[in-house]
Image (cartoon, rainbow, N blue to C red; front, side, top):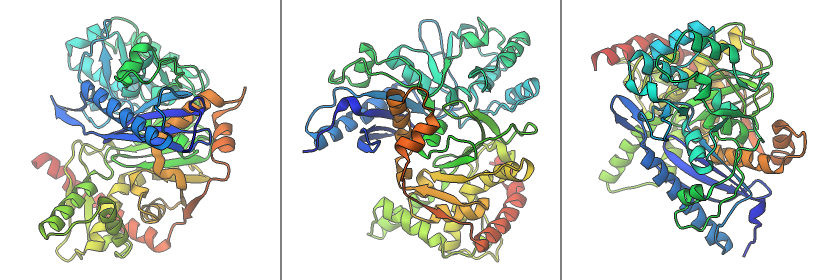
Length: 526
């Protein structure tokens, strides 16, 4: 049976929107074992949320499945690892009082309830503050008169919360911290001038102390972020088999782990993460010329400035349609494995007319700030003479998953003359070979690469950050470590933009923009 030295391993756990996954890598940075737990957000009290008891049930289940997979492969129990790290869906709002009690439901990135606060802070700072950022949620709670603000002692994100409970450290990686409050990349921490302005203008209302005192400490990739405490070890593994003392890297968001997993942390690199939501991260060579409401300014895990185009919905509506198709198959006495059904649907899209035959689809499960839509109403629109075929329908669903991203990315390419050497794709949209990659290349007008490791995703990227924390040489940057130790010789495929796809997507997007009025009317009427 294969052997492995646990001291040379690294563990990444990521709490994504629909799945919590744990990935253990060996000294070759390849996956040695994994485990996953499916979960879903809830609509409660006017917010999209997850309960913290579900967080721990999911983390423990994913870890237990990982440990079982490891024992099955190596014949020994998983008692420790060389290093580990926690990642979670980006930003949001998780406030706690001095005793560590949760003060309000976890408000996730999917909520679009902070428009007034986000606009107010953007004007105050001269810096775009998106609705999902923690400071926007805090300011909106003040504007709403929510009594819990006066008792906030600690404000963090999902990744920061899990890390805190496992290590006792109130810290956050700089990439995730940049979605709580603007970062000064030169200083490597929150922007001091903006913090002072927030406090001077009393934006925190009854907040009991300056904002900087309730935010997590900012750390960059590779820094010491504490170690697993005895209490944390039992919280992770109630069996008591897993030992405390494991060193931790700074917790990051799923945007940061996506950058690590695609080696997109250097200037002129970028990646597109496409799953429940879709977002593009572009590492900038220079600052943008002005503020764009559609573009977030965040950082890599090592603190480099990044332009981020984030769209709230990507594959959720496509997934719903495929569940409907699976029901039809079952009603007919047939069935297909889920992966095969998806492959067939995606491949059918390549047979479609380049502009989807006049079909227009909106996949909005929630509001979409990039297009100014306040709430979500999934919608399929067509003229009577549109050609409703399975192929056109499939392509319309895939184009809907890319349309809002295209609108934001055009600002970077056309208004700011941003240049990319590589744009890498990862996430569920790219699981079926070629299809999503080719259509995105046509939509964005730029080559799209997918590496063989793309399917490993954020949990693997988190494990890489943990390995960097443990293994980096003195003075070795994250960019150098990933390029030299992890991705040297990595294989993948590149899809160049197809002119017919580009022309077809342009026609689809023209119809899409015009039909936005229909989507907004549906929000108002339904």
